[in-house]
Every structure is written in C-alpha cells, then in structure tokens.
Image 1 (spheres, helix red, strand yellow):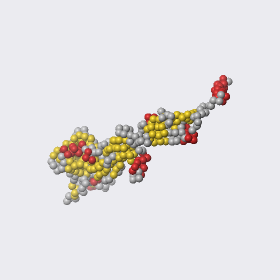
Image 2 (cartoon, rainbow, N blue to C red; image 1 turned 180 degrees about the horizontal axis):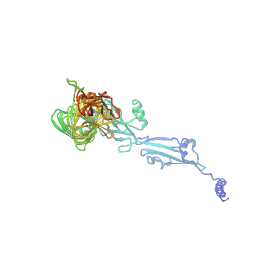
Image 3 (tube, helix red, strand yellow; image 1 turned 90 degrees about the vertical axis):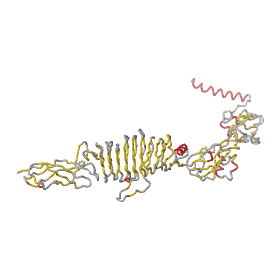
Image 4 (cartoon, one colour; image 1 turned 30 degrees about the horizontal axis):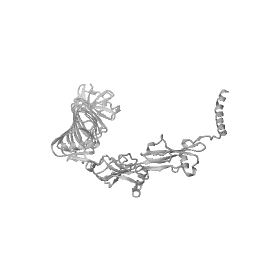
Length: 571
C-alpha cells in the first residue's frame, strides 16, 4: 500500500501545479528539445547554412533574422554561439541583431532563443562555415639541378605564401598536385606530393589550391570549365629524369655511385689491372654487375645480387653475409671468408656452349672456390671446371642437366645432387661427402679421400672407398664386391646371398666338369646371370680353390663379380 502512495503523490503534485496556473491565468512553460533545433531553423530562420570568407569585404559578415511570418508580438529573441559544438571562436555575434562576423576558420553553430508569450521556448540552429582560401603557394623542395633518378620516389612539399585574410594565417583550402608534359611516365602525384618516374624523360609539376574537395573533383572532371575553382597555383617546375643506373671504372667512381640512394644498378666496366675494395654498407637496393676481367676485388657490401662476367683468373674475396652471386663465363678465384654466409652461387652463361673437335663441351666457367664460411646453395647451370677447398661447407650443391660434362675436384665436404653426366675426384678433406644420383648417368666418381664418401641412388646407400672401391651398406649389412676406384657408368655389385657351390669331379678332369651354382641379389631382389670358370680348361688333380665369375644379364646396371670357391676331387 505504501508503494502505491509513492507513485500517486508526484502525479497529484503535477496536477495541482497545472490547476494553480490555470486559476491564476499563468501560462504553462514549454521548452522544445535541442535535438529538434535544426528542424526549427527551416521554419523560423532566414538562412540555415551560410559560408563566410575571412578577409573578403562583403563576404565576411552576415545577419541572421527570424522570418517575418513567424514573428510574434511580445516574444523575445536572443542570439548566441553554441559553446559546446564546432569551433565557437570561428565567429562573433551581436546577441540582439543576429549579425555574425567571421573571425577564424572553422564551423560555428548559431542559436536563437525564442521565448513566446505563452512561455514556450524555441531554439532553432543554423550553421556557419568560415573559410580562408589560399591565394599564393610555392614548391619548397625542387631537387638539385631539377634532376631525379628513374624508379626512385620523390616527395614534393609546398609552402602557403598568402591567404585571403593575409599572411601567416591558417587556411581552410586544400592543396593538390598537377603533372604535365610527362615523358617520364610519372602519371599522377599522390595527395601528399609523391611522384615516381618510371623511365628517363621529363615532366612538369605544380601545386594547385582549392576551397574544398568538391571543387577539386569538379576541376579533375573538366579542367577547362572549372579553372576558376583554383584559388592559387605555384609556378611550374620542370624536372629531368635520368637513368637509375651508373657505370664505374675506378674505386672513386664506384664509391660515388654506392652513396647515390637513387642508383639501383651499378656496372663496373674496366680492362685495367687493379684492386677495388667495396666498402661495407647495406646496398640491398642495388644490383652490381662486374665486367672487370683484370681486377681483383674485396667486397664488404651487401647487394641485391652480384653478377660477375668474364673474369680472367682474378680473385674475389667475399667478406659480407647473405650475398647472391651469378658467375658467367668466368675464370675466377672466389674466397669466402671465415663465418661468412652466402645465400647462393650460380655458375651460368649467356652464350651457347662451345664444342671441341672431339664433341665434348668446353667449359666457360673455371671456378676455384676456397670456402671458410657457408654457402647455402651452389647451382651449376653451365658446363664448368670447379675446385672446392676450405674448411667451410656447401649445404646444397646442385648440378643441373644443362651442366653436363662438368668436372669437379673436391677438397672439402659437399652435399652433391645431380641428374646429368659429370666427373668428380674426391681428395683428402672431402671424406664424409654425399653424392645424390637422381638417375643413372655416364659419370666418373674417383675417391682419393682416404675414407668413405656416400653415394645415394633410388633409396639405397652406397659407399665408395679409396681402399676397397665400391661398397654397399644396406640396413647395416656389409656387402662387398671388388669394383676398383672408378666407374665409367655408375653400376652396382650384386651380393652373394647363398654359398657358391660346385659339384665334385674326378682327378685329372678339366675344371669345366664342375658345375657352379649360387644366388645373387641386390637390395633384396634377385639378380639373374651366368656362372663361368675363369680358367675352365685347367686340369684338376687335387682339391683346391679356383677362380670363378658371375656375369649379370642386366650388364647395364650391374657389374661382373669374381671370386674363388673350393672344388673337391674324387678318385
């Protein structure tokens, strides 16, 4: 019951107030919500939106009025600027007359408090935008001599010199950029003034100013008919675009090009016998091409790529990590310093292979790599003579099909993969190397390392020993047959999987009377073939061991195997 009384009491109080006002003929006050003030402006104010311009006589003031048709005798009208919205400092206002004067750029909200005779309060709202247009502008950072490099972005900036209201005053205008007479393939500039010429040529650029974005878009659509929308424009700047490449023949010329941030391609072109030291630095935005057959180099710089063409027995000493090399038609000593990591070395050529009178390709690359660091990849794409030494390592040594006939002398450990014909000699220091044969090839592998190297083919692992010749290890089982040192065609030795047996013969009979039998396999599969005595016509007078041979039917992939076995003589 108490809760019901609490709800009824406020309602009763309100009714009593209204009755009291009616008895005393006092109007009940009403105030229209602020959110309806914009809608009221259409009914009560002569203008809802007005643009004013600083410094322009006749356009920097305006008087807001209440429409005559809604004026009410006895009502009061008070003008003011809303303090909690927009920029109230943009205008000043006469609170009695409604005259507004532009003071600063920005948007102000003009309010009129109308109190009617019945005490109803109305507050219509109007908007005033104050502009200060740019009347003079200039470009501030034209490049030295008016020259840019192709491919390099350039940021142009501007300075506002004057406005409608005077110098050193904030402006409401916008600045954009215009390109003309463009033979450098600039196209357009960004709103921030960034241009990127794509080729050598010329272009003109200027800053253009507008009152607002709508005027700028109209000008873009039709520059002729909308030319008056430009409030100011700078003088045209003519820019010459040169190539982004440079050529050096000396140390001094090279260092100048390295310091030029807009050069992306450097060519060292010289026949002079000299030494050039490339200073340390991050030149990842530059590619280096070296046509200097008689120059020795020491490099401490990091480039996007280094291509060396036609070196003639000179030395390149590499002292920087992560470089990528391409060597074309080179006779060169490449020295990789201690702890240096190279991404890749590619041996290639832009020329067709030269063929000697015997039909063999003549190498266009003779490369001596002394490696005390690490090379992630050595890719041989053209026939080459390669010597590898040093205590470093090459993680991936790949001989491509186009490099058939390549000869390799290895004095260091390599992980070598190939699917083409080659010749390799493994010297002391290369023990533990791995040779991955992707397919059969007419190749020669000679192991003089003094220890095992590993040959992998078709999921089997073979070991070539300088002492024993080819040996095969599968699942830890030692299988040995006597192929000595080299093989003009990579073949494999069958394994004796059963005892070689013979039938007894009478004393004085020829050896061919004893029948040989046995089973040979390779990687668990039987190898078919024929048994022969090496000296079948020999007279046998006593028990003894005689030499035999097994000739596989698949002689292309398997070697002939020799051995001895005992023959028993009976009387």
